[in-house]
Length: 114
Image (cartoon, rainbow, N blue to C red; front, side, top):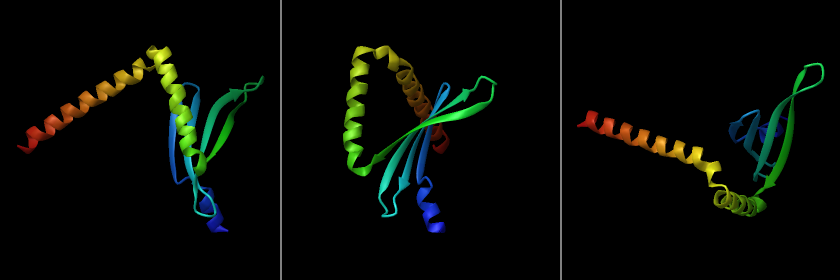
C-alpha cells in the first residue's frame, strides 16, 4: 500500500499567494509513471457563525493537454497584456528590481574575488 501512497504525493509544487486566494500548481504521477498537473484554487471562507473552512476548486491537466493548455493560457495573457498593460506594471517593476539586485550582487562578488 505504501507504493500507492507515494503516487498521490506531489513530485513538485508551487504555491502562489494572491490576496485571499492561494493557487497550487502540483506535479503528480500516475500508477503508470506519467506526470499530470493539478491546479488548485484555495480560498478561506466563513459561514454565518464565523467558522472558517477552505473552499477548493481543482483542475486536472494530463500530459497530452499540456501544450494546448499552455498555448491557450499564453494567448489570453497576451490579449490582456495588449488590452490592459497596466495590469502587468507591478510584475515588470519587480522583475527590473530583481535584475538590478542581481547585477549589484554579481558586482559585489566580483570585487570580493579580485
